Image 1: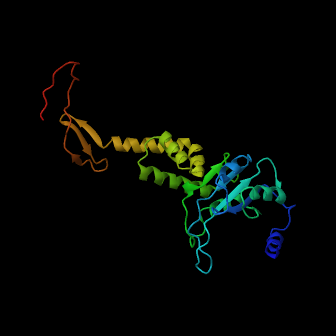
Image 2: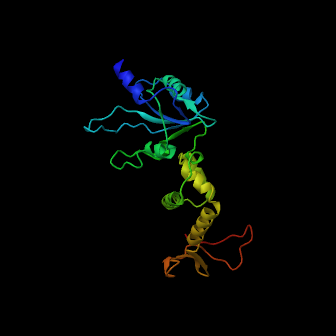
Image 3: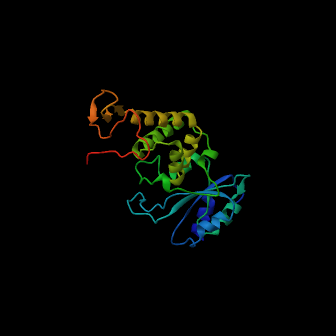
Length: 242
């Protein structure tokens, strides 16, 4: 009882109001269908990857847990209302969140390099949660995300804008998807330019198609295709060296 009173005191009181609340859930106590229970509330949720590599100040491993953000988009909720929601999945008392963007970054320890880093693509969104809908990115943050997407295009060999958006969507990279979808002209132009550079490496000559270094003009591979001044008609037998 004393421990519960201490928690309640730290939590202030049940009349506290907030639009965004955060709490943790533990695999050992949450019901198997806890995600479905949250979904049925109609609220927006962001669920962290399972934190199974966290350590306390004494370097002891913490119990595996999830950090969860709950959003009342249409208004605010009292502490009592938020508590009833967490009790439905056997989770501890919730806490009001003053900076949703800051807490969202904490889901993966993005601003805590001394802590274990979790994969942002493993954040689960429920009922349409998107961090872009709840916080304005600064110009520098947008530029950093653009750079991240550009590196992704290079590393994954993405050539089409549609493939880029599909990749971001399938990997739950919601912020990157929002930035990419709102900068269509930039990424379309970049992808088109990359394709042009790739295509310019191959030059058709009277000896065949050769691969050329676009910067130096050096021939990289010998001709491998037969060139015709006039395409052969359908049905024409072509003699080829094997």
